[in-house]
Amino acid sequence: DIQMTQSPSSLSASVGDRVTITCRASQSISTYLNWYQQRPGKAPKLLIYTASSLQSGVPSRFSGSGSGADFTLTISSLQPEDFATYYCQQSYSTPWTFGQGTKVEIK
Amino acid sequence: QVQLVESGGGVVQPGRSLRLSCAASGFTFSSFGMHWVRQVPGKGLEWVAIISYDGRNTYYADSVKGRFTISRDNSKNTLYLQMNSLRAEDTAVYYCAKDRKWLEAFDIWGQGTMVTVSS
Image (tube, rainbow over all chains, first blue to last red; front, side, top):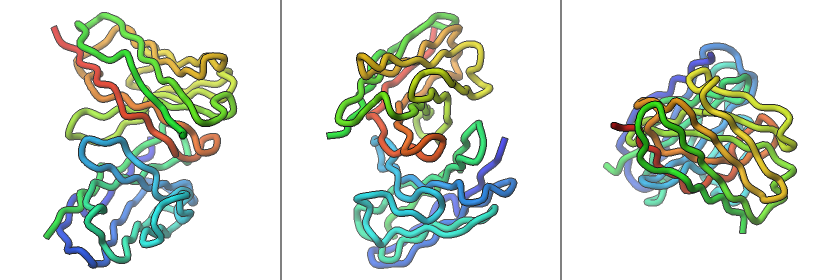
């Protein structure tokens, strides 16, 4: 199975900050990498697919980059509604696997 | 409005069975692959199973292979997860999710249904 490792596991940031979350795969997965946001008590929401494509309806302050084994999710200017947990997920091969999550908290 | 609504969760004893349902609306259900993903409360996400748009192809996580069966009824716009020989470690919120494109990403999720396996 492909292991996905996110860093950091949690971070504290202020509204307006630029936030970067990284995700590393245990092998090359090309650009088969997706990012999700999960607010407390809610289902996950797709933000970015195939490493850098913005899902319809997602604000442009979210962006993704990377290929191979190293990927990044960037929030250019953190908004109050962005405080949540973020997960990366690989769709290169079954079983699809997720990172352990990065919790973004208010500083 | 694109929507997925799960049902069928509850409390069940170890070794027993449960069937989850996921009712889809607002999109052409018969054109898309569908998944089940689960999450232990307070923990991360675990993919469980996928079924192709026509039901001909299925894949499972090793943790549920041989015990769970994913199926669909395209005439009823409904996805199912038959869970047999349930274990305490199957306790989780179960989400159904739609494939954005075959084997790509989960673009629509249901609200989840809680399954608790306990004696």
